[in-house]
Length: 124
Image (cartoon, rainbow, N blue to C red; front, side):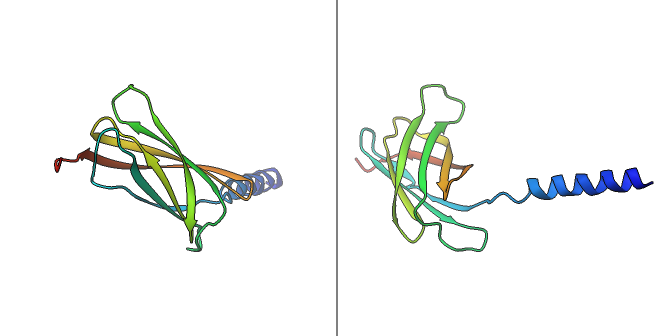
């Protein structure tokens, strides 16, 4: 019986240590439309688990069009203040995208993803 108790205790410790990694709350803001050949602003708000803005992080994103293999759009994002990061992307096609977001905050690396859709700017 003592062996099983020890085994269960060790498994609980392993599970708890695996669950202690930091996660971030992300809010991705993109325009509804874009103009081909022009830079389109992408904004990302990052908060920690306590709802506090994440400041001073290194942030980048790779935008991948779902179902297509024409190449990804990658961008580095610059902090504009209060946990908000901004990047510029040049879209060539309208459609559904996945933003693979990479965050390096205080030496801790993390990857998340957000999905969005964007269409051509019809006002031209």
